[in-house]
Image 1: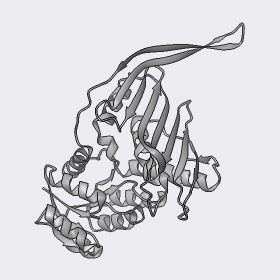
Image 2 (image 1 turned 90 degrees about the vertical axis):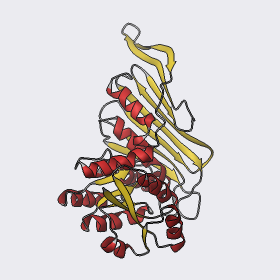
Image 3 (image 1 turned 120 degrees about the horizontal axis):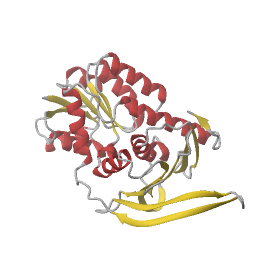
Image 4 (image 1 turned 135 degrees about the vertical axis):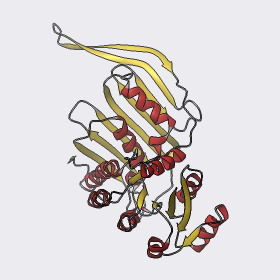
Length: 334
């Protein structure tokens, strides 16, 4: 039985506590939060919890084998490092850290101490993304050509990170999970419309050595909530719409073929528009699958679905995107 402790009982900590309570081979024994009212709320949900307001006391006294961190991004590194040095397995809310150097250090510590380091990129555990992964691996879409993501809504403005660090990790993690090729450069532009100076709208493009390309639109200032990804292959194309209550995935038997007519030196495009297939998607709760994966990775000493290296890859793209924004949209090599 793996004993789990949670640091941070805010919006996401509530969801994490509920799912780890219900996870197999696991018991939640402690929660740490500086706010006593949040600890009282946690104990109403799970009366046997040991609660702590001080992180250092939690690390030294909490009866836990693994620590789940659900705090603002700027605290991820320091808390995860303390937990790893205390011999605890660690799961960190996305993104893993606020810098590549911090992520590298956490990965090295986890390897040195033979501890599981996982990142809560929740969408990878959804039935939708798992279905798309199967389609890609079976070659149903053909050779992938593009990945186009739109993740926009009105708020919530984050106090410590911009819209890229807040929203893009979801879709970058999905991209990296589906596409084995890694990008060679990043171009990103964005604007801040508040006194905080944090960009609330941004556009990110990833370039690849092949002809594949990925683009992300992120915004906190849209009147519409859109969570949509288009994935194009040379055989079929896929639409993933997470806002849709039931028909989250649609596979389009649509494509094109380009032929050069040598005599006229013109490009002729043959379009193919066929049927639309809507696969049945398992209605599992992604967080429940994530919690179970983390616990089983510890029990069986195996790599979790989203390990520290996967988290590091996402952070490296985010850091390069931030640098590109600061340099006015300059291309940054990865």
